[in-house]
Amino acid sequence: MSRSSPDAVLIRDAVESDLARITEIYNWTIVDNHVSFDTEPFDEARRLRWWKDRPVDLPCLVAEIDGDVVGVSYASRYRPKPAYRSSAETTIVLDQRHLGRGVGTTLLGAMVERLRGEGFHRAIAIVALPNDASIALHHKLGYRTAGVLTDVGSKLGEYWDTEILERPLTPEGS
Image (cartoon, rainbow, N blue to C red):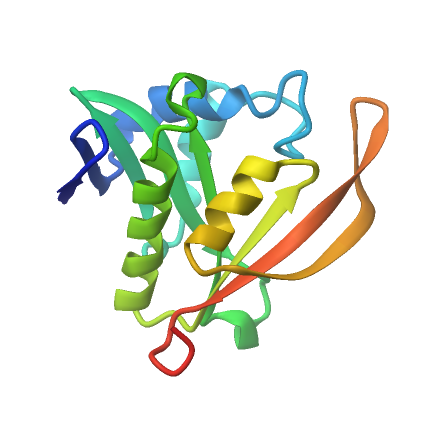
């Protein structure tokens, strides 16, 4: 656990009792916008399966303010092939009421440090475009743009681009 500003944000490992709030926060990215390429909101059963299927070496952190979970960041396998095992894809989603208040910097920064501490070599983020705030957050935390894939996601009757960002986690690249 770590405490840091703004607004006395507590960053901690997620626990199963956080799943309802994580689902609530995440589902806003699915309905009526392109931020997530999921197309159906999570329900309780699907989120629980996601939780139980998560590899134990991949962290899931939450940001809490005054006892309320206001954000989630989790790491996933970047790709399934064994040679990619030292790279992790990072995801961050915040409660809309807490956007632009520094919570994302604190939460994603904690994820980067956790992955570094657990021996990962590279963090990867894939951001659906446009999303200037997310791109700025990732750049602020040392991610660099590796490229843009055009029209790779189809949602809401449109095709969407994604920006791939990477961040070294090992001492020689940090």
